[in-house]
Length: 89
Image 1 (cartoon, rainbow, N blue to C red):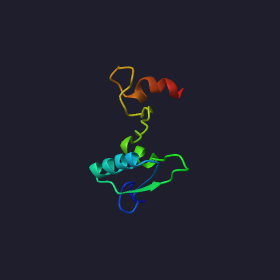
Image 2 (cartoon, rainbow, N blue to C red):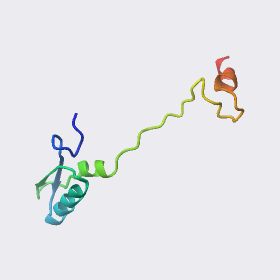
Image 3 (cartoon, one colour):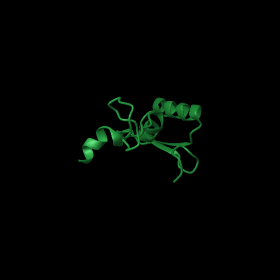
């Protein structure tokens, strides 16, 4: 799937005013993104594609401890030889 903002998958927004359209156009031009602006006065604005690119979601980091990772208790031992040994019982 093409990246959002590329030529194959442009940002699609729906605005209600010229000022809002200029904001979207200037923002996209500054970042080099391709976009399509639609004026629909009877529907609410939808600039969610632009917001996704301006505020990307952060990947979720796992708190899982591997068997061979250092033990989080600070002993300096591997988890499997320290606190992980107690979990296995």
